Image (cartoon, rainbow, N blue to C red; front, side, top):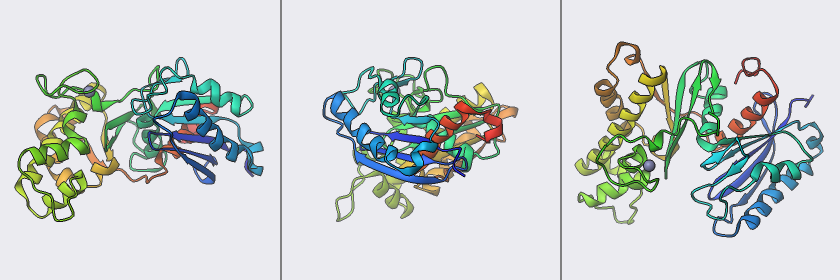
Length: 317
Ligand SMILES: [Zn+2]
């Protein structure tokens, strides 16, 4: 019954999640540990090994045929290494070799977390049935991935579609990545909140200064909060329009914490797209909220492992 199982790892700055997933994307076994993100690289790897140890202890493990990893980036699938910005102990860290050793030599597929989310949305979520899609995660950072010609397009290193670091403001603020005016520098949750505060927005009695609190204020009509979301929406729209013009996507899926803001984000985003996506072949571009929940990273990593072994079209991924 379980001949199609794969193991999936979702590795981020706060948690390391693992699962055994079947060919329909159902999660059968789970394991999770906090990421010791400030510790040295070997300590972080030991946390991965603990998660994998729980999976390999399952009676279902004998059916696992491959491992998919979605990791905070940058990743380098060509060398099997990762250098997550928020895990400083891992720089060019040989994660694929470590996971292969811990799993008895199973084949390992490594992709960036934005690419993993994209694989999940294409397999089971809002991009299902779309052959050309951009999926984005707008939260503490801004990431993304591409589906082109019906297939996930991770690129040579597993980072393709990283829309957060496309510059949409040539003379804009310096971005931690080294560039200027990146989508992330304008549209991430912390930057939405920072801009609202800088322009005079005052948090409520609870003192919450998160982007979610700015969204609540925007829904109540606070003009500074509305303006901060509108600015984020314009940055996202410019990045989406550029992507659509380059590779002819027909849907952009927006998820992550900021993506949950609803119409305070999506209304100005759709409006701004009419200004930036102007050529005939991008005008029908649809923007829609993500549908996958917190398991998107695991499901997407599983999808990458499944497509490694099978014809992607046959797997429906
Ligand atoms: Zn940047």
